[in-house]
Length: 448
Image (tube, rainbow, N blue to C red; front, side):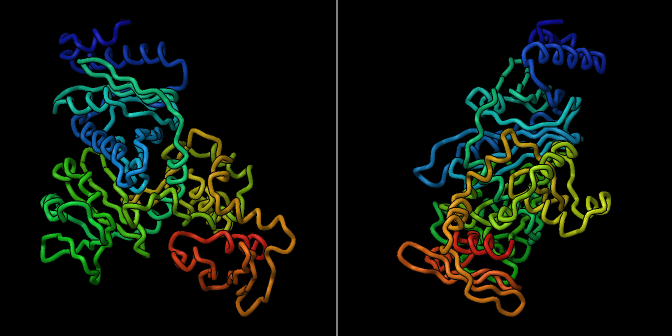
């Protein structure tokens, strides 16, 4: 069989049970091999194609959304295949919303030929095809190194690999750091999830809102209270309007410092959808610096190469077990985990409370060139007297002077207390958006 589209549309093939399905998958495999010419990560059937299509449609909605006017519209989901599952990840065009659809083993009926990651556009043909998938329609999916193919009786849609935007790369290095710190705050039923959307304030929120439970009903308040979850730019939750009525449960998470919140929809059938929001609608995850300190102590290149050789895409990364299995000191593995996460090579699954490995389709060295604060900190070290030691106090607390533009800033690093600086950046953000270049320079000079 060479004409897959014709074979797929024939009722005789679709109605012959397992034999017909096997023939269908065989034709799909042959066709994919002829057209791709590169590595194919997964090919097979979506068990609940309608529900998966709703999740992918919501992902496409997130990618097309922008909550900052000057941001460009981009449509570049990242797809990771391996360990029996597919993960589709994306950011809103303004980079302040992160979304991920996970299709676990229960959601897929096919074969994983190898693990890997690609990134494609979700153009109008794909969005339209997803919107037209009916509740009982059989749908096949192929994820390869160079393309993602969706196959229906009505035809095929192919999305080709595209260049990954730099903002996406920087966002991945940041959002996982927030997710790994989050704690579960609320668990809502499907009815409560629908009520959550109904309680959203009208229009575009200009101030923070706080999600609380008033009796059994979730609602939003303008004033914080014990146990409330801060949600900046609460209007962004409307992205979930079409998916919340389909979930079995909704879990709400928050970072301890209130700088991000996440909503995890348990969809059933091995599917879950994650939506993470930055602290404010105008703040993109790509501009946060919560992972910069993990990049100060550079990870040896052989460690990254070893991780790429050892782990498959989506494979669980448990730092404690990894340390025990390989006889490594816990602080060494903590450093490895922090660095891999800061480079975007680790994602974080909130429901499983564990990291998963992600092979990104670019050279990891590219990450280091995308952090201007870290680059500027290293530039300060090139001059002999731009970073000067003042004193070393109790518990290793180090005071330094770092040259600014026509002024010297006082920096405190080391010891049990958070780093501090007298520069305008630190005064404005109080460390909530990562360290300034002066703190980084002092850490590079005196704490490495």
